[in-house]
Length: 172
Image 1 (cartoon, rainbow, N blue to C red):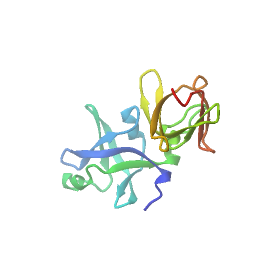
Image 2: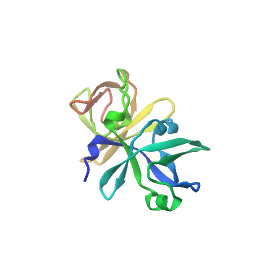
Image 3: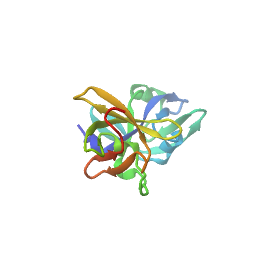
Image 4: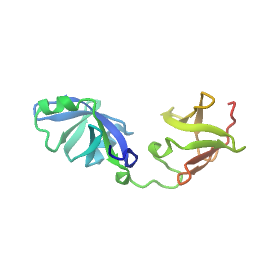
């Protein structure tokens, strides 16, 4: 299987669009149209990432549609419906200080100021006011929601050591 660590999932194929083999895309990017800025995309087929060049794409209603190299007929799209699309990590634009991609935070260990381990970042949610870390502790079978607010709650994000240090208690 291809090394999944070097890939970041950015969407999936949701269906066929039109008669020329265009695909409807469900985008995981925010905003949704940002998926259009990536080429090539990689498709997960039988455990391997297959490179696909994007010929063209656009916002169509509330969704995204794309033309992918080598796919010229709607019948070619049907077996691909539900297939995930990804980019390589090096395709991401560099972030500025204290800015992070969600994909960089998932899997990091969350530790509070008392050196107590809260758990591992399982996912993130957008609430409008700020993003929220979903921190799961498998041993204690707990899940905590920790606001991702730099300098107020989040004191340090150390990507090299895979740690997020937070001003947050175990029992919040």
